[in-house]
Length: 176
Image (cartoon, rainbow, N blue to C red; front, side):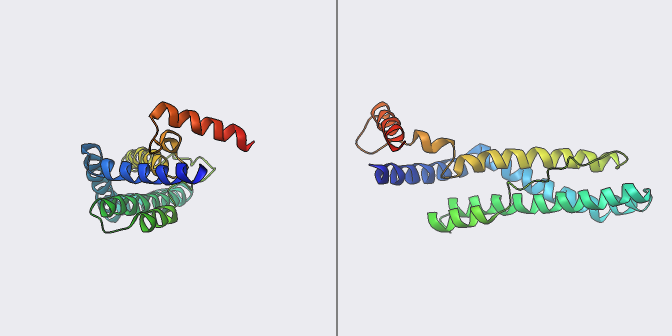
């Protein structure tokens, strides 16, 4: 019984990735994410570089750390967006997709809340935008995870949704 649930869960999650990746919501997220990557790169290479030279030493160090952190996180977001799009276009098998998806460092975060005091206003705005898009991508990625929210609701072949859920609940309590 457990194997059938896992197989149907994997199929259901694969279907979710396909459906989501073809949605307007994904198209919008892709556009926003890639635009933000370009916006941040342009800022850091231009106005941000000039602004950083005028900062006090401690603020300049925070600026450098935050810009590296933001760039790393946005590169992971861009890789995730491209990966999902590639899966949509059938460039990856489900195993390749899940392996590549898990290798990204989307869910790593610093335990320290960075001090953004003294950073240029535009930098703070970009950091907030990047925090927001990273949070959205992390949420969707958790759903796509085989241990994600949807795995509990995957329909089992041959059973109604209610019967399938009852079977999974019974199985969970029997494993004890």
